[in-house]
Image 1 (cartoon, rainbow, N blue to C red):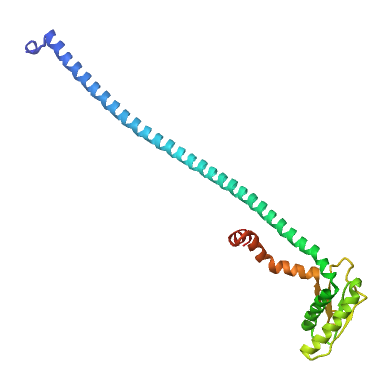
Image 2: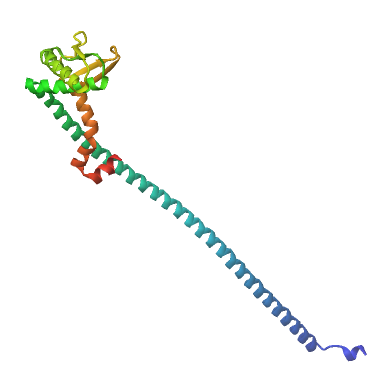
Length: 230
């Protein structure tokens, strides 16, 4: 019985060959599965790394772009400010020169005594109207006392004609204006507590303040005036 089922050497060799082929085929298929899976994992990992590097590069680029933009903005602002300051300085120097020239011409108004007397009268009257007191003192520089006293008499007379009140106006010789003053007067009332500065220098300062916008517009134009001084 056992002999009937005994395999010959050729049959055993055939069976071994089949088993070997089967095992080899399984190994090949398993190797292929491993290779496919490795390729998939490699592709996933590669894609992940690419995304990470791309994101990192984008972040660095955005940071550098912002830094460059900020640097450019700072540079532009610095240049603009320097240019603006230069223009403002040049304009202010021109304005200062104009008013310096006007200041130098003030002395010429005292040379014509009759015209100067009229100016002093009007400057004094302005103070008399503002104070509206019975006794008022006027301060002037000593060199102008003669013409000032005549102007005060005229101012007191005109004040009475216009207001209907007597006013006594005297020169405060104890507190004169400095000899270097260009001219004009200071009107003092309220027992010495109130004074109205109507000297030429002070009137020129007021003129500078009041006329400055118009002067700027005339010299530099309306749009430029707004651009640099608003």
